[in-house]
Amino acid sequence: MAIDLSDATLQEKVRNQAAEYRDSMVRFLRDMIAIPSESLKEGAVVERARQEMEAVGFDEIKIDGLGNLLGRIGHGKQIVVIDAHLDTVGVGDPAGWKIDPFEGEVRDGIIYGRGAADQESGFAAAVYAGKIIKDLDLEGDYQYWVTGTVMEEDCDGLCWQHIYKENVLRPHVVVSSEPTNLGVYRGHRGRMEMEVRTKGVSCHGSMPERGVNAIYKMRSIIAEIEQLNEDLASTADPFLGKGTVTISHIRSTSPSLCAVADSCTIHLDRRLTIGENLEFAVEQIKSLPSVRASEASVTVLEYAETAYTGLVYPTQKYFPTWCMDADSDPVNAGVVAARIALGQEPRVDKWAFSTNGVATCGMFKIPTIGFGPANEIHAHTVDDQCPIEDLVKAAAFYACFPTAWCATQK
Image (cartoon, rainbow, N blue to C red):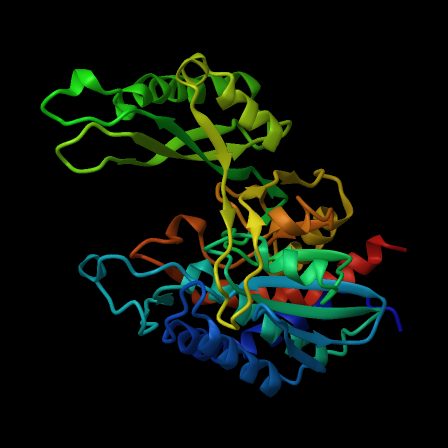
């Protein structure tokens, strides 16, 4: 029998069932927060997450070669994925925290701790959405997959490069559960990492005129890159906004601290809007007058770190821009599911930061949207947090989304 999401009684059942699992989701999220799980060190939290999937009753659970956790409910044709990364950034200076970042403290209806917002809360809600689907017989012509992915904070999208290229899973649609403050998000800017390097000629620091200081050669390049960031406003996209470029690190080499620098390198964080790609961004830097005059090199960086499983899966540090049309099938399905979960019209927006969508949609063109508990402004901060009621509403959304998606595919 076809599932009718417009049925008010069914909608109420979904919301009530999500509320029934409030305490279970809180307990599970607190357990995950208590396990330090920085990128490359996710093994313990992946195992804890696997145990919860097993207890909930997922039909299939597996861990791939990179260490990603994947769980399935149902046997239909449409492959619907709710994606959450299980790794977190570090704590930073512990003195900056008012609470224990690994306690999962609950205060005034909010869970605090590293990973609460970004983004183990999304995983907790997605797992219990699977239980709601089973409880209310919402299974249809779809497979409901929840992915607990790894290494996202270190290299967003690498997990999905492995999943897709190695044929671990080929979805028809993906929902990222990164924090959206319960809005339906349909894209974000891409990004890439570059280095610009100048070469000099070293000599004794007491006689600097005998050498060529690579740091001085970098001076005009830095000024032109700062100006380039301002100039990028002229090509801003109406929805995603402008591209940006900033220098995030600078270093130099020399035989000693009493010698002229023989090289200087700056690290560029380049955010890419619609119409900007790797070739475009690299050429912009190479064509700067100061880069040409100093014969500086411009390099797109690579990532090749070892996963907790021991696998190295190298990639270029280029993560494409992606954006779904406002009237596209996944956005429309997301709006339907959000109306049910929230009881009102949802906000449709975009992320400021980057997500695994750079791979699912940016690289592989899989229709992708976002809907997640918590507010992205708390990601990576000492106030990392998630309201408990966000877990309930997110679980209701994830439980309804597969049916809403399938309705758009008829």
